Image (tube, rainbow, N blue to C red; front, side, top):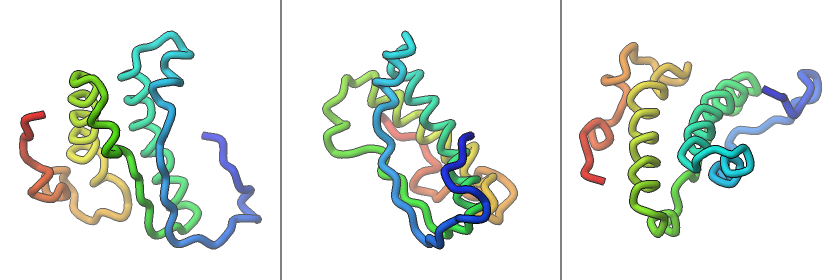
Length: 117
């Protein structure tokens, strides 16, 4: 991953908010399906979290699904919700800020259940 700041010139930040945008457009430019772009965006979240930890950023906010996103085709919304659920259940707990050893223990109960999308 390309790092924006050299190690000796890292700004002091405590909270960074990110609005992921353009994953579907990126996929289209690559000749891929929109959902493949969203999947790549989810994978990039892990890189961002690790880099933020290296920079000493304590809080990250990802505003990844706006009210307007509900107007997307149903299949795309379902795919996005499944990607989010999968990420929360399988990846989020492995980042250093989470102290519990298993995905099931780290996912809040309201997320750790099946939702009818």
